[in-house]
Image (cartoon, rainbow, N blue to C red; front, side, top):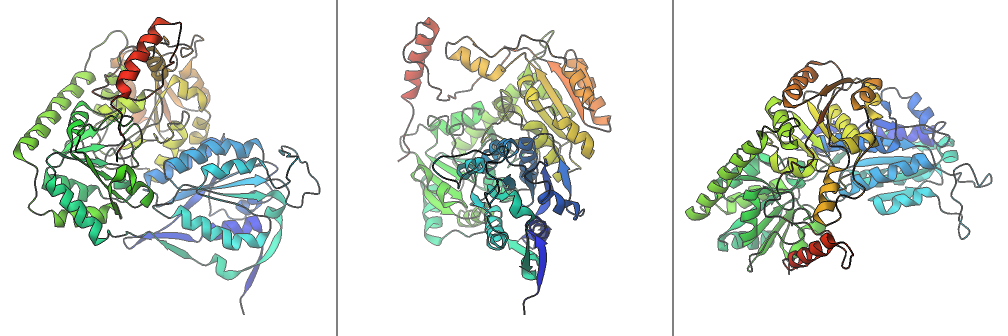
Length: 608
């Protein structure tokens, strides 16, 4: 006879989450680190009461529900998607605050379990506080907004429904191909309702993270395509890191001589000084990577989804005989660009690729071109690191100073503004995980909570959160969370008096930076200090370098504020990004920008 345990729905959910494990390559770990969130009337008596009874399942009180999801994403990314957080909120604004985080997680293919409170399932007290009423149905709430930004979505109307819903959510969360946000909307009355659950629901479950192997025919066709190419080029995406394929990729590149460009998610798949590593590719790419990509007759994508930044809005690759090979665990991505699809785990596929390509190597002339382009690019990075601008340094000099102060395993983390472009070009990643950019959604406000999550995942690594003044003002509250949890990160706050990235983009489109400058002065150091941080205002590069040493020695979260020269930007290096310009305008600069825009668009290609 099946034994039963009488629990509330909230208690049963926590008991289930505590017993979920993942296994890859023979190593097992608990999947959930704990839960983050904020309590309100929609979850305080359900999930909140359950967490109170389970102190071994840590709860982290954040200051904004969106930030809680960002923290969970930073944690999941740092663990290569092998561990995760759950996030809870009340109904109403608490729930909708998490929608941006859900979109960010799903777009970046990173696992997070969302448990928003919901309106009463029994309906007799409706409309309740914060309820969205609809005249055409009673089966709707603001939580339906999670549907398009979740990889799995369900609403739990009865306690026993979690018996089937929770395993389905876990299936998605632990799938390398399907992972993202999984949302279970929990009506507040159902959370508190008791049910006799089968004990089997709470047994230890181990979810195997499989490494799918490529089929023989696709692999053979891919090998044939490589052997027939003259100018192959490999793009390392996030999948190369998540599958822990970095060592295999390094050997493959050294064996074949094929140059490697990196996406934002894939940067760090090779150390910057690997002979075949040319750095970022695409709209924010390096001169070396973009010049070789333009002439490539074969592109080998490893774990990339080919965003418009990676392809420079379909202008990066101009060889008329261009072909693609896509190695990806997700069939959806493997078939992009009319490629030879190799649907497989990146590490396994590269191992088999290497074995099948024994004896193959690019031509000496092509190898020499790769080496010369790489050498020229490293010289350009050194130049940008040491411009010696006065009185304010360029942002590139700030990046250089941070890099010179870093240990090899330290982590640079950012998300939005001009920082991703400059970092993608200039940051010299030395170890996997040393570059953590959220650029699928490029969400302002991610950086501080994301850095907290990354630090929780790997406390031995110093985490540098690189933020602009605009981003900082959107989510400074999580400094208090870092103080509360005793999580030490170093925040570099670059003050360029507004939205520098969009300001530059606006100027390039003829709009003169309209609406992108700040005119009200803000004392960022005092603000950070009031939230509990060790805060330093650095005037000039010498003071900034001294501040870095202070922050590294500090025993808590630190914020360094440095003002930079707004107009000292890093060049584009043979790249372009499609941002539509007004077709008619009374502004002369806009009309001129439209002419240049139409000329650039002619280079866009369909990959058929």
